[in-house]
Structure formats: C-alpha cells, structure tokens
Image (tube, rainbow, N blue to C red):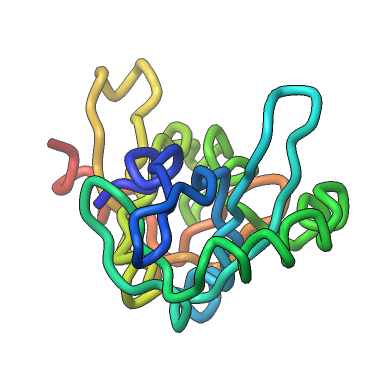
Length: 167
C-alpha cells in the first residue's frame, strides 16, 4: 500500500465509532519501520492529535480499526503536541519531495511516495519520480539501498544500477 493512500483513512474503534483520521506516519528508515501513526480529531481550528503503534491496530482496509474504544482514544487525544510530533527525525510528509542522489553524486529525482505494510509497520520501498532528463518515469528504491536521509536522500548504489530499473 502507498503511504499516501494510508494517510487520510478514517480511524474507527471495534464498535464502529469514528475516532479521527490518519494524519501522518513517523518513520525509522534505518530499521525499515513505521514507528508511530499520527491520528487527528476535530475541526480545522480545534484539531488534536495522538499516536498509536502497530500493536494498537486491529485491521486495515477501507478504514483503520484500532484496538481501543472511543472513550480510551478520547482520553489520549490532545495529550501529544503536534509540534513535538513534527520534530521527530523523519515523518512521511518530510520525506516526500526530498531529492534522491546516487552514491556517485547523480541526482535522480524526488521521493514521490512510500510503499508500506502498515499492519506490520514496515517500510517496503520508496517510489522516486525521475527528474526530467530521465523522462517522466518512476522507480523503486529498497530500504537497504538507502545510505542516509538528511537534507537529501543518499543512496548506496550508483547511477548505472538505477538505469535498468526505470519503468
């Protein structure tokens, strides 16, 4: 599943009561894991947030069903400050748009999406949109091919390894 499709899903409890919506995911890219899922509740001006882990997810389909009641969720909503959640090392929204560079310094393009298995909290691979000189193509990068992620996403592989993958 694409992370962009997961974000925005409605979250409900096991009795079908709406809790909120998936707002973002906090990532641990070096471990290929989703650390936490951020859920928001409320209107534009009164939005409050809380996080859950994979152990609190019951099922994922058209909706995300969590293993806590609406009452338990309401007790947690607002206990976490959005600013502190944004200050994590990496979340999905910070990842999208990052420039991807090969080990030999060639710019490939930008991160477009992330393939995930949210039920298992796993990151599968990155979807990269190639820059215009390579054509409007996309390709996938596996987690073990990422050297580091800071201002740029640096790969462990060189440009020749990528050319054969461009779809």
